Structure formats: C-alpha cells, structure tokens
Image (cartoon, rainbow, N blue to C red):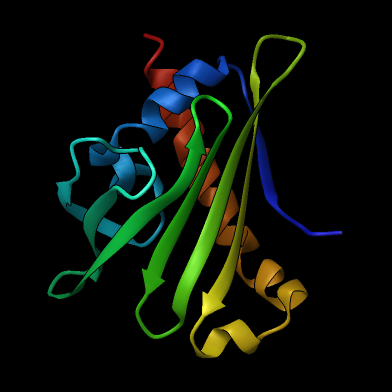
Length: 147
C-alpha cells in the first residue's frame, strides 16, 4: 500500500481549494519553492503552469510546474520539473470529513529522469516528511482564509 502524506483540515474542501487554485500562493506552502515568477491566468486548468524558482538566494534555479488534471475541490494533479531528479507527478486529494473538514492527501513520484529508477516505496519514504510539511502549511493558509 502506498504511503502518502495526509492531514486533517478543520475547514471545508472549498477553503483548501481556494489556496490550491491561487498559483501566487504556491511558494507559501510548497517546501523548496522560493518565489513565483508568473502564473498562467487560467490556473489551475489542465495545461496551465506556475513559473517559480527553487533554492535559496543567490542559488536559485528557475523551474515550472504544470497542471496535468484537476477536479475542483477534489483533486489536483501536477507535473513538476525537479532539475537533477527529473520530473515528478504530484497528486493532491481533498476528501470531505463528516465533521465538515477536509482530509488532504499528497502523493509524489518521480516519473522521468534518473530517480524514476528508484523503487516507489523508497521514493515515498524519502518525500513523505517534505510532503507532510507542505500539507501542514497548506492547512495553515486555508485556516487563515476563513478569517
């Protein structure tokens, strides 16, 4: 069974989706993204991109992330270039909870490049702490969006 990062948000899926669908907030919740250079106007429609930088100044690399597919308030699938590692696919899922909150999940797999040869189970273990932190930040932003 795949290990994915999960977190419970005390807000409705619409609030979490509000953060996900604002490309300018990407660097606020994605660990490693340091600044946003541009966001396609139709974000997060399939094929749109966020142009961002990764790293710490002055050692920044320009990168981009593209939407592969999305279902509003349910799922966002991204394809991120990960310079040395290749390309990764990231699936973020939103599931309403009985209490009116949201169970947010995040799975990431390298799908192209040298690290695609690393077994899925090993990849999952390596990215789990980073993805858990991404979700923690995403929930904090969503909670702030309710104020």
